[in-house]
Length: 219
Image 1 (cartoon, rainbow, N blue to C red):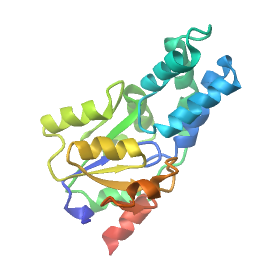
Image 2: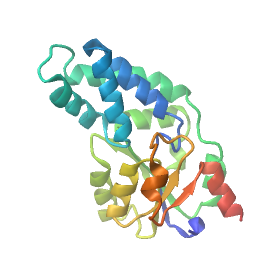
Image 3: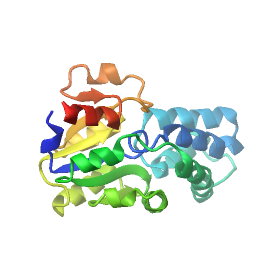
Image 4: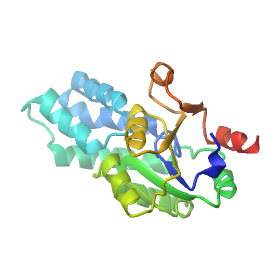
């Protein structure tokens, strides 16, 4: 895979650009605790098994499939409480080492964020942490799904045909390859436990992190 030849690099956020998977996992658990520890753990398990899917769909699943009419916070309250839990973690978690170095090495390429995280929240966090200027193609997230965002940005020619998606989940792979993007899996911060089995017979490059991407470019 010749990373330097891609005209567009599309990044997931959590587990790729930010070390924030654990931040969000803990936030789901704390937000769901009013319904009890067992219910909270079921939401966490669903969240981890469905990495990359928006919080909106995860909480809708939680309310409809697990709670089934049990009294407690509604969808709007859950989303508000979750956002409050997540914000501090996103402002303080580790930024991927080598990110700015990679940007310098790929000045020819347009960069985008396409995440399951809330779009408004992402744009605020990236602005505060002075990362927004790296992503000249835009920062996109939920409530639109990754499929909707990819289809829209490809149609608008914001994502050119020779594009690479850099992600850390099964959903990242499935949504990006559906639209013809090549895929690179970063494993260091991923919560996708069975990634080696899943990718065993697929033509996917697996690297530790963005620093390793720089190493590939150096070689």
